[in-house]
Every structure is written in C-alpha cells, then in structure tokens.
Image (cartoon, rainbow, N blue to C red):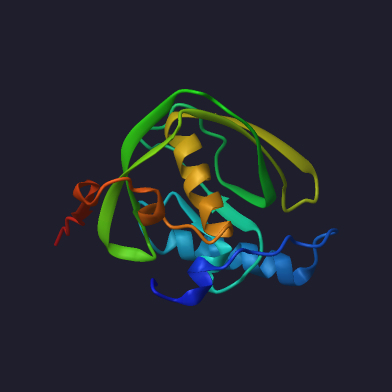
Length: 161
C-alpha cells in the first residue's frame, strides 16, 4: 500500500531462464489478483518483489476490446504505442481510497517472456492496453497518481457495501 517505498522503486529485470523463485512470485501475483474480485492486473512491487513481472486478465470485462486472457508477463517492454491518447478513470489496489483520470495510449505492442520461458508479443488496445500500461508503470516506480495532470482529476473511490 502507498506510501510503501517499494512502490516508488524501479524494478530489476528477471534473469533468464526462469527459476522457481520467479515462478513463485508469478503464482503470488495470480493468487493476489484472484483474491480481489474485479482486479484486472497486478505488478510484482505490489506484493513486495522488486522484479519486472506483472499479471493481467481483462477476460470478460465490459470495456475490453482486445483480450489475451490471463497472462504473466516477465520483463515486459513496450515496443510500440499508438498515437491516439484517451483519458479514463483508473484505480489501484495500492491506493484503495482514490481513483483518477489518466491519459494513456489507445493501443500498444508489448513483448515479454511467458512463464513457459517462451517469448510473447501482444497487440493490445483499449482497456487491455490501459491495464498493461498501468502495470508496467509500477515496474518503473510510477503510480497512476503520477500520471494525473490536475488535482481535479482525483476522486474518492466509491465503496459498495
């Protein structure tokens, strides 16, 4: 949870080939994501691991256009980004009390290594692109609040009981 310093720390690349410790971090990411209904992504620093691993899953989300399913991305890199930029509301498990309007690219291409050690190339657009960009920001020590351009674009999170 913010203000934990690990959330503002740039993460180290994972050494290849993948080892058991890396696979354990990936399992922890997936388990943590599963424990929060509606969670579509999480990054290793959010569970205290300062390595370049994220988990995403926008399956069935109403805003998803592209949907590559449940994925763990190791050492992800954005290789291209669409020029069109869209402002949308974002939230984060690490900042549970607020959401904010963030402008991001509408489409991206990301390359990474999967848990099987094979290279992956994902062409993401709309909501999936936003989720990947949000999670990759965590690997560089950035939070969605760092991307908010005006204080008026930050909102208390609505709580449902």
